[in-house]
Image (cartoon, rainbow, N blue to C red):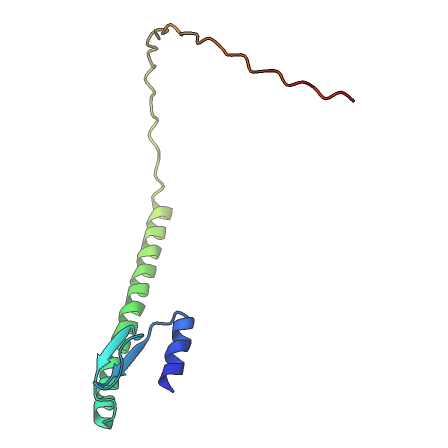
Length: 120
């Protein structure tokens, strides 16, 4: 029954996290969690830690988004308050260097055999 779920996840390119016992084959599992998958206390403890890690990750991601939004608002406010004036840029006149012409060697052209036009 687990093999069907693993195959389906592989078809859909979904990363697979699995608690794998010593009597199980870990091939096909992306993230193996070595555990006794028969003991309910073992399963509960592992799921508790996974839940805590997920919650911490979500909080970190949300706080990162809030900081990005506040930084964006601060940058937008500063841009509106103090418009930047561009200093005029003076271009120096470019000096033209005299170009020396290299003598071109002419290669003799070979004539291609003319194809006869088909008569009607």
